[in-house]
Every structure is written in structure tokens, then in C-alpha cells.
Image (cartoon, rainbow, N blue to C red; front, side, top):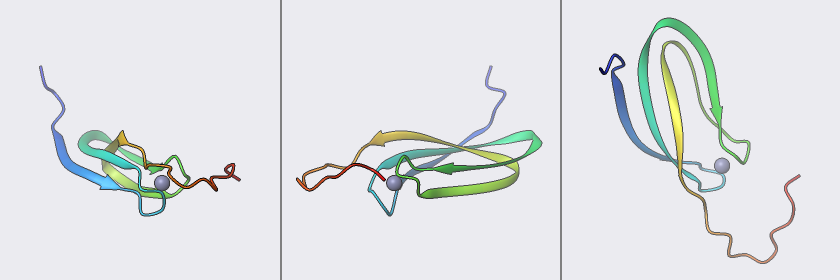
Length: 72
Ligand SMILES: [Zn+2]
């Protein structure tokens, strides 16, 4: 049974690090306040109300540069 109505919003890419996520939304029976931040710390989205969003990691950016230092 598919109780939830899931809305497929396609892919979204982090403007900071390039990680790609598959975004879906669904409507809840209650209100929610939440947000999603990329693994790099960049806030991708924030929401409040009866719609919740989920982010599924699809691909990580290629790390071709050798001067890749530790995350601060
Ligand atoms: Zn990012």
C-alpha cells in the first residue's frame, strides 16, 4: 500500500562541492521544521510546514586535485 504520495523532484547538485543528490518530497499529516545540509556543510534546503524532503546521495565529486587537505 502506498499511503505516502511521493513527489520526485529530480536531482540537485551542491553548489559548493558538486555532490549530486536525488530529491524527493512527501506530504505529511503533521507540520515539520527541518533542513538538509550537504556532507560539506552547505545547507541545501530548509523547510517548514506539511511537506518533508529527503535527499539521497547519488554521486560524489571527483577529487582530482592533489592539494586536497583535511576538512577544517
Ligand atoms: Zn556540498
